[in-house]
Image (cartoon, rainbow, N blue to C red; front, side, top):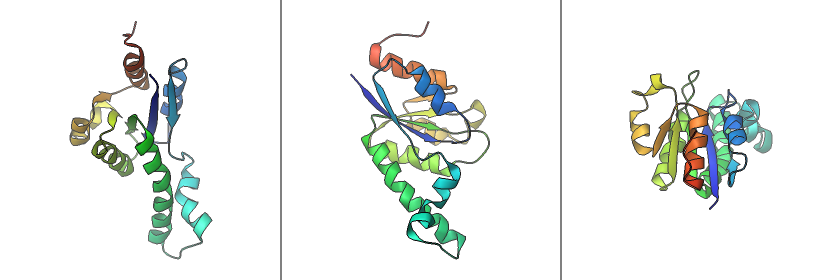
Length: 149
């Protein structure tokens, strides 16, 4: 068995690298959104032309990024959605809902202090982890039936 995993959410820490490194040796392929914040914000106007109003600047970028996001989530077997502590990640919540609506297996990765704010997102997930290593252990268990330690 092999898994396709889409890594969605927070882009300011190395959680993706921790999961990818931890999953070495497992039959897992990973995809993700563009994590260069400036490129992600500016892709629409860089490709399709400038906008006078910030709303339309952001809207163009969101639409172009949605092409990649929809494809990644649609192709995934498992969608990991990370909520960090620094910013409100409304896009991550949207990705989690979209993945759940498509019937994807969702793993939420979030700090315990976000439990109340994310209760509906957590309820739609099949697992809620606090650390990237827990996500790796879930993937290992799913693929091999092996428990940690």
